Image (tube, rainbow, N blue to C red):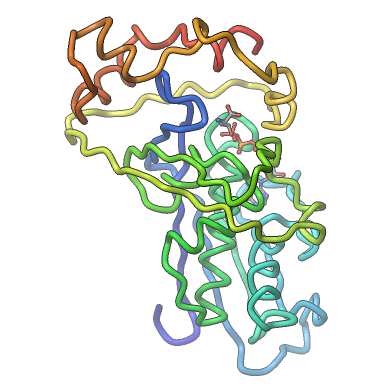
Length: 269
Ligand SMILES: Nc1ncnc2c1ncn2[C@@H]1O[C@H](COP(=O)(O)OP(=O)(O)OP(=O)(O)O)[C@@H](O)[C@H]1O
Ligand SMILES: N[C@@H](CCO)C(=O)O
């Protein structure tokens, strides 16, 4: 951060790697960038004085709403600020977003927006939250951690939710309109970063149509037969004979074709 201007950069992510449905994801070098300017006084051209913030996009983001109560980056930031003693952005804030992540194509655009909003609130509110604490807030908006965790910490990450209560609402997706009804639950994320060789390169195949995560999740059954679900450990035993996966075998299974027929992420979809 330099003076009253700073940048936030959050990567796209690919989730559901190999047998890690809702668990294993990786960050890729395609970025959502926010260029943020803070003003000591509210400019005369201020657009949303009630929120003290405005956002605009460079590039093609014609389908994304700009209103602070609808734009997911600002909804998340305002939610966190309001949960920490602020009624609006503490200084008038202009955000210029350059989004290079295709929307609704399985590259974690909503997770990047949510993580960017969380980091934005942390910076403007000087809240001092750790990445782990910010992830708890991100979970309020996307209640499966396989995109938001690598978007926050980078690399290849296996993560799961520690539920604070018996509620297992894994239907939550990035719906900005629900922001005002949401509350932080006490759920948290445990994660393990998996080391990998920089010789591994990612190739992404982006579909020409948009499919929202909420629709893609709605076709999934509520339960699976045990035989439908291949765990990492199962793959370890079947394919390499190791009793437990090591970090290297994890990567191999996740990246190699053997893992692809895992039923929770294919079949119904
Ligand atoms: N930078 C952004 N600013 C504001 N809203 C965004 C931004 N990125 C994504 N969104 C919102 O999130 C929606 C897409 O979220 P959705 O979860 O359906 O797909 P995805 O995150 O791109 O894909 P997946 O979760 O399958 O990887 C967009 O249609 C838009 O409403
Ligand atoms: N694990 C998530 C990733 C997409 O957000 C799913 O398959 O619904």
